[in-house]
Image 1 (cartoon, rainbow, N blue to C red):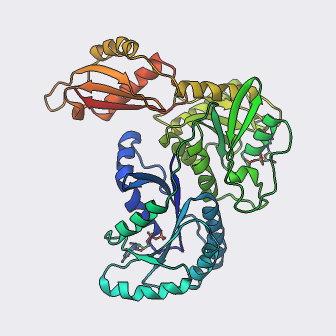
Image 2 (image 1 turned 135 degrees about the horizontal axis):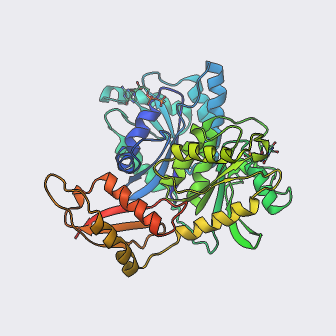
Length: 434
Ligand code: GDP
Ligand code: GDP
């Protein structure tokens, strides 16, 4: 788990350029594993050994200027609520604009660290012009050029200095987070679990963040539910933008052990649900997919569930070993099963295979189908073990780790999944030099 940094500011100031610079190196690693870049607005970065999550609030809104303005205000407010620190980016080319002043007004009230970043300062001449940004009333500013990287070091030094240390508190109980798009039925699900309507509480801005876990004992299972601001403060405004579901999911996902990813059966597993799925996968969290409102699906012949499942599996390839349940919170259909499955996934995520057993099972499989020769060189895997990490990672020791390609690693992953139960849990396979 890591602190969350949000980059806010009006369109075109360079937020995405800066964001990409921050997450580039990491992203490349992730790409090698998943094969594709799945979401562009959220990533992990680190500086001076401190890891943090970055959210780029840009690129969500399209529309006229006044739509823009209202949306940006709301995005900034949500960023303030959910993030631990904020980078407010402005543009030296345009100078101070009215919209910058509006955002600054919101930020001046904030108790969290705010960093004013004056972007597009590509040369020394431009640095002198930056003084005009003092007028925003946010104090010191940092000049940078996101395009060539100039100035980013100073900004990041200051940023990580002020970031709170978010250490993963140990929990005795499984921690579940219910995530998904607005209207999927998340709060109804939670209400069904706790059996009363007390979940919806009035919200005083800024007070929701602190106690994030709530303990429950239902159906003979004990667990913590990780709250997301979005569920607790049932807002009346229809928040259908992806930004809101991503923003609200990030913290909940980082805090939990297992994500209960809920979607509305009548809307399907769309791109926004998929983004949340990869967010959880990337954070090595357990996942259970609940297709809710199954009562509304009229045509329930035997094949409907099968086809629906196939469609979802296609979207989440190659990580398809994930439980998918068809539920109705309204009629309480399979609600118990959902919690039972989440507990199973939790146990799978904690599963430790003893090394002797792991080698006994895996070495014959490898011998039977060894890594293909690469550039005429033969790879010999001699030994393997599960690493002592909080989520399942496996190391295979061999003479030429760099010659083992992705498809073979995937083959090993599939074999591990066949032989041991890691359903719903992302696993990582490493090749190490022996
Ligand atoms: P966003 O809408 O705030 O995410 O802005 P983008 O990152 O999409 O950038 C908007 C435009 O500004 C693009 O054409 C970028 O190439 C350009 N840009 C971003 N950073 C810099 C910079 O440091 N210097 C200059 N000269 N242009 C930049
Ligand atoms: P959230 O935004 O994800 O928390 O969604 P809500 O729990 O507020 O639910 C959105 C709407 O879907 C509400 O009107 C619920 O009554 C309705 N809903 C939730 N679950 C079901 C279900 O299983 N079947 C049907 N038909 N409606 C549901």
